[in-house]
Each structure stands twice: as C-alpha cells, then as structure tokens.
Image (cartoon, rainbow over all chains, first blue to last red; front, side):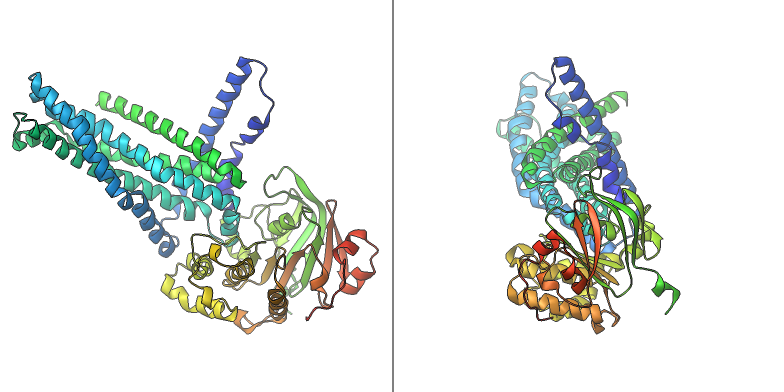
Length: 286
Length: 261
C-alpha cells in the first residue's frame, strides 16, 4: 500500500529536469521536452495500471466506506452537472443540429440526415463535448482538492491509518467520472438530437418526426452503442487518472497547486483528443 | 512476562532516515535505539532536525535508508499490505492534526475504524461517540476541522489515532502551540494512557513524542533523546538530561517551569 503512490511517482521525477539550468541550444530544449513528455507518459501509465490493479484487487474491501464515496463522485461528476448539460445540449441542438438539418434540406440531401447526425453528434461531438465539460468542471476540482490534500499531509495521514490512498481517493473518482461522462453523454445526445429537430421543424423543414426518428434508428448500429460506451468510459477513466495523478504527484506545496491544475487540464484535453483519434481509427476499421 | 512482551516495540540498529519529501536526502544517521513496551520517550530537537521523519519511519511509513528497523520484532524493509496489522498496532498523531478537511470531526475519527473493519457509519457511531465524549470533543462532532480552533484539531487527531486502540502511540510535537488549558489536559491524558487507561485495554501504552520545547515534559518516568546535526543521542532520564552539558538541551530547557504532571 505504501508503495502504490510511491511507485508511480518515483518513475517520473520530473522535478529534476524542471530545476535544471536553461538549455543552451534549441536541441537541448527539444530533447528535454521530449524526455519530460516520455516521463509523464510513463508516470501516467504506471498510475493507471496501479489504479486498475487496486480496482480489481480491492473490489470487496471496505465496501461500507468506498461505495458511498463512489455514489458521491457519481453525483458530483454526473447528477450535479445535469442542468448545465441540459442547457449545453439544447444549445448544441439549436446551433449545430438544427442548422445541419435545414442545410441538408435546402440542398436536397435530407436522406443523409440520419447518418450525418450519427457521425457528428453520436460519435464525435456528444462524447467529446461531455468529456471536455466534465474535465473543466470536475477534473480541475480534482487536482485542486487532491493537491491541497497532499500539500496538507492528508495522504500521509491516510497511510498512517491503514487506508490505501489510491483506494480511498482515486478509485471512487475514476469510477464516478467514467460513469458520469457515460450517462451525461447519453443525455446530451438525446436532448441535442431532439432540440435540433425542434429547430428544424420551426424552420418548416419537410421532415416528419417519424421519418427523422426512422433515419436515426437506421443509421445507428450496435457498434455505435458499444463504441460510445467504451469511448465515454475511456474518457472518464483517463481524465480522472490525469487529474488525480497531477494532484497527488506534484503539489508538495500549496503554491504549486494552481500551476499543476493548469498543466493537468491541458494534458487532459490532449489525452481526450488522442482517445478520440484512436476511436476514429476504430470506426474506420469496422 | 511472555516472549512477545520481551520483544521491543521499536528496535533500530544503525538506521539512517531519509527525508519524507525527498528520500535521497538523509536527515538522521546511525540511529541505534530500542523502545520497550510501556516506555514513554521524548525526542527533543530543534526545527528541521528530522524529528518528524524519524517518527514516520518508526511508524513504518518509510523504510530506512540504511540499517535495520524492527517493529514488534518484524523487519520493516519490505513492509507492505501483508504487514498492515502490525503497522496498525502503532497510532500516529501528526503535528497540526492533518485531519481530513472534507469530513466532520466524528467522520474523521470514525474513518479508520470503518475502513479497517468495513463498518457502516451507524455501526461505528457508538464507539466514536464514547471516545469523543472521553476527550470532550462531543460538542464538535458535526463540525469540520477548518471551523474549529487548532487546539481542538490537535485533540481530534489524537482521538483519530486512538480509535484503533494502538499499543504504541507516536506523537509529532503534540504540545506545539497549545493554550495553557489544553496543554494541561494533554499532559494529564497522556499520563493516563501511559499508565494504562481502561478504555484502551487497561495496559500501559508505549509512547514516543517529539518536542522542540522540553519544559512541559518534565517527569521522572520519561526517557529522553536528542536529535542534532543528523545525530541521535540517548540522554536518559530527566535528571540525567538536566545534568548533560549540552548547549542544545539547555536551549530546549530555556526556562525551567513546574508542570502539573
């Protein structure tokens, strides 16, 4: 247990490189940046594997403590964000989907509406937008909370009390965020598709609700549902890993917390884009 | 006396201690020190002398950089989850408390019990309530740590460490910054624990406290050691320490005052 956090953090002692003198040449700078990047990837990978190991190995440990914490995290990364997601989904429907529907109608390509909506909203915009919103709203809070807890010595206090910090602090956040992003994406897609049709309907687009629904159903395959679930869970898992890792790994002093939060959110965005690119390849292959 | 009682609770041989925040930096070297069951040790030292790091190592939270450290007779080099039960025989009170700010005082105290024994809040409530009442913390049970004074936070940290009924209690500078009333309460309560308190099994509790001011710790039963310039020096009893011609000890004893215990 004592080793769980230490293992991941020792693998990426980036402070050594950050403290070093400024490079004399651009080659040095490039080399150092590359090295830092590889160390961060290694640290994040190790942290993700350790967290997965703890999830699997300790699924039955201290259920009376961990399950309420998971419910709390689901509420924080899911239920509490519903009003904001409802607003964003309505806006997305009116601004993007509605205009796409009316544009397709104008060029006589209304038959392609279903497949366009599935590609744009179900496969791409819905999951990515949901992930970005949760990253901004909950991911940043994760870094600040954990960074402050680490700087205040709460992690050492947990270890002294025989409580595995990964199990108590990280596992509920990872599970909560994965389930939260998955559920919020489903709501976002349904509301955006509905409000989008409403906007098109108000513009007198010649498409009945029945035809619109039929086109959507025909364009959606079982693979879309499976990959949507996988993708959103992957977004949630990795956003939680990146933000928790930076919260716990780096801020040993309170003044470092804000700087680390910015870095974690930036890396979270990069990770989401990379996951999205990976799923595009998967869609193209299937 | 059984064989287990003859095994020292803490046994260090040639131990070097790394800093908690950077293990590559050695803060204390060549510690050879043994704490028998029931003893009460006070480790004196100025700020940043490595007292907290030594105590963290004694709690099994860090491995020694060099030397061997046995906790209840078990080597701590590979102290992992399998040895958790041994480690939980040691309670730890951090300087400043280091309570969990998101939880109330009652939740802070209940957490180790709930986690270790997989108890629901209701199942742990009775035991937690009894301990909070004993320590006069019951009126603050539903308040979060940031809303109470530092004196009470420190006391809540002691309650959190005691909920698991440890055999050894490690206290990191527990009297630092306490008001006079709280200071007296602490000295009285620690003395009760050291002699044996019925709520914690009745047997004498082994204790190690660190201090940067030795004046409140005057007591013939206590043993003293000093940390200075990375060196750990055993000073013996209060009277032996008083007669030691050490400038740091004199500094830590700056003004001699009478304590109630």
